[in-house]
Amino acid sequence: MKPASLLTILLTALITTFSCTESITDSRPRIIRAPQDMIWTADTLKGFDQYAQLIPSNLLVFSANDAWLVCWSDIARGLLWHFDGKSWKESNIAADVGGMRVNDIAGYSSSDLWACGYSGDEIFLAHYNGSKWTKYNTNGIKGELLDMCKDTEGNLWVCGRNGLIMKYDRAKWITNYIYLQKAESSKYWFNCVGFTDGLIHLSMSHIDFSKKIENYYYIHGNISRWLFSDSMIIKNHNSEIKWGYYEFNSSNNRIHSMGINGYWIYENGWQKKFSYVKSIYDAWESAFDYKIIVGESKASFYNGTHWKDFETILDVNPSLFTYKSVWTTGYETFIVGYARDDRLIVWRGK
Image (cartoon, rainbow, N blue to C red):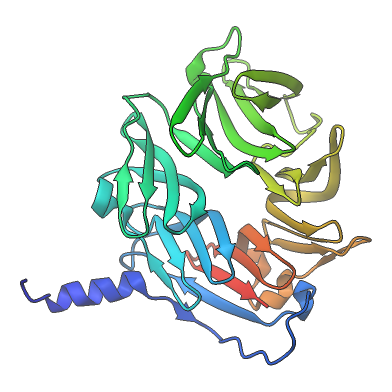
């Protein structure tokens, strides 16, 4: 083995470490607490070099000591990060599979994990066994995979462009397409997928650039049968927004949607639960009286009767930050955000 150069050692250290503004030292009993009563640690993640930009995309948490973060980067490094309870380290997927972009991850554990995205003009899937990423043969399917989730039966679901939806039953990937009549497949896509009670929920987007109209469709069902359940047309700022088409989230066996102007839950139809003049990007509900939503300069907690904002306790200027992802049990919480000055911070509360 050749001895590592000083430059290699320095670059490795840069990509596998984080800076922490404070450490958790909490001798209190482990009980459910509102975010305002938690003790918070802030971990700052940095890119491969001083010029590389990192923007958080999706968060997957198995436990308070086992979490994954998907990032967008302008270079093929820093795309995936793993937290082991002590520090964040890059999982260098590019070194194992070559050029690609990762949009989301889902799986069963940190040694049985799948990533999705695109490579060139084809969809991309890869599996992680705890030590190495292996690219899955997608047989040249064109497009891009955008979102993933795991249902209560242990199946993985991934959706993307051209009406593509795929299911993994722990043995094989099954491919299905949902077609939008009178529309070119390249102009519509699924941007988010979630699950409840044996049903898969999808949000489809179709942009008619010639007419400057945005069409959105809410679809649910399973791999063999799909139902177009609702739709909306966005023509201008006065158009009615029925659900959040940025992101679906499945927590506490309910489907949550986030987007422009607020946050919704599906309860025999979409019900708006939080109104906001900007965008909400994520939500997590650990119980009916414990949920957190995050968005553009916003973090808010619902205790079963009312909402209370808490972004100011995270010790940054909220006007500079977009809070992108959240996960909570009520005992522990992760919040991921990024600032206009390219800072990426993961807050951990307990």
